[in-house]
Length: 157
Image 1 (spheres, rainbow, N blue to C red):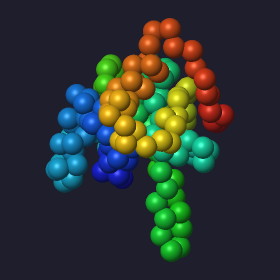
Image 2 (cartoon, rainbow, N blue to C red; image 1 turned 45 degrees about the horizontal axis):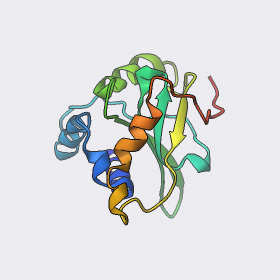
Image 3 (cartoon, rainbow, N blue to C red; image 1 turned 90 degrees about the vertical axis):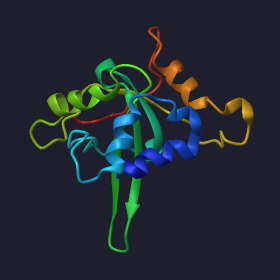
Image 4 (cartoon, rainbow, N blue to C red; image 1 turned 90 degrees about the horizontal axis):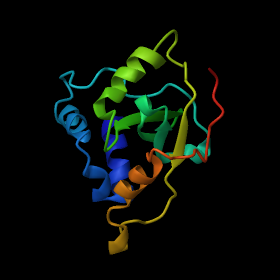
C-alpha cells in the first residue's frame, strides 16, 4: 500500500513530489519492508467519497498536514479503498505519523478530527515543462499561513 501511495503522486505530478525530505523515511520503509522504520499506522481508516480518490493535501489541522493518497484495490471478489498518508514538504513532516497514532488511532481507529484537504485536480502535469514542479506549488499554495479551506469532507467523528 505504501509503495502504491508513493508512486501515484510521483506518476501524477512528477519530481515536484519527490523533492520532499519527509519522504526519505518512506523510501527507506519501501526498501526495507521487514523493518519497522515508519510507525505501523500510515493510513486512515475513514471512507472517503469517490471525488477524493487520487492525490490530496491535508491542510488543517497543521499537525496533520500531509499528502493523502486515496485509491482502490480491486480483486475479483472485492474492492477496498485505502487512504495513505505521506509526509509533506514542510512541518510536521514525518511527525504526522505521531499525530495519527496519538489522536486518530483511538477506539476502533475510525475516529477522524476536523480535517480539511484539497484535491489535486487530475491533469497531466508531466507534459509541460512549466508544470514540472507543480507538486511543490500545490504544497506551498495549500499550506500558506493565510490559507482558507475550499473543501471540507463530511466525516463522522
